[in-house]
Length: 312
Image (cartoon, rainbow, N blue to C red; front, side, top):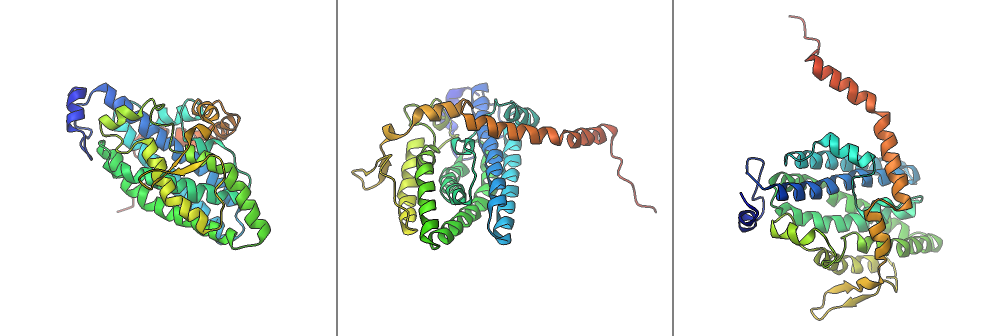
């Protein structure tokens, strides 16, 4: 199948492992799914930090469950990427640990307070839901199947983050002020979560032509604003003056993208941001710490099934 035929046939869940697809499609799909899987792993690392900062046992348990979900999502996605035949799961995990694997901008920033929890668990995960819901209609069927489970669980994550935000914003004035300060720091990062503008994206146009993506970066960012600006105000947050938000002729909201710090964004995209090194280093150390487990399992597999059998 050539790329022109792929474009003609592209649609929701149009292709699977049995299809003879061109290398260009397979590599583009692998890059996209690997990026998503890496982001699930690195997002889980931030939630692990929130487990330590959580103010109650119930909150700690919820954060721990969310970490488990995120790592589970990553495993599903690495397996979906493997079905394209370009890279193995082990290769993708190694690339992430060595600083070659890319992941979402918001997960490059270290976190150090509970006030940041709703920034990730409500706003960033809310943005993720906007994007992931569209990926149920992606053209690579294993990816779409994975999204069915991921979206179901992400819905709970957003509710978890909203519950934290509600609790903080109905607390003391000092707590509300701390949340507002944190929101102002994270707001530009959240808006950049959806990626570069359409005209600056290196992959958006091709991904849409072959059905891997169904909605552009700018469309996702604007739909997020339409839904989450009212939610932020509902809980008493003031929208920062910059980046400037404006209403378009059709009544939908948009951001003046020139107000966003794109130089920092592109530094992050190359894994060259100072925080990136800390996050990736943390991932590498943990991967090395459990290398003995993988080696042991590989040894058992190589030796064959040695599970003791029940006596007759």
